[in-house]
Image 1 (cartoon, rainbow, N blue to C red):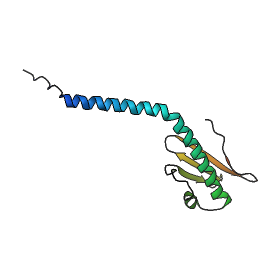
Image 2: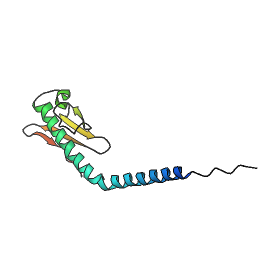
Image 3: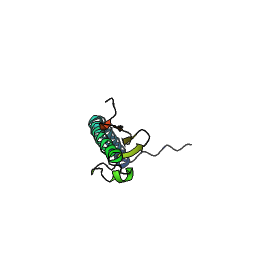
Image 4: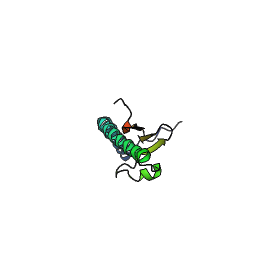
Length: 115
């Protein structure tokens, strides 16, 4: 005769329900705050790209040296440069990226983006 599965204890049921509720709350918060986070990330990466581009191609400093000029709170923003195109791209992982390019007579300008 096969054994019937042991019934779940009430504490394991409570833990399961708590995990489901927490998961639903996190998913809801992500959905609600996705747009504002993306907006802030766009502003931050635009600023970082433009400042780093000026630092790199107007002031002539290395990108590693320009990294030191990032404001507090921008630790997740990464910078990369393209010396041939005279551009710097700032990325916020999995959210957005923006590029600024040096233009003779204009300095560093942000590339057109769709938002």
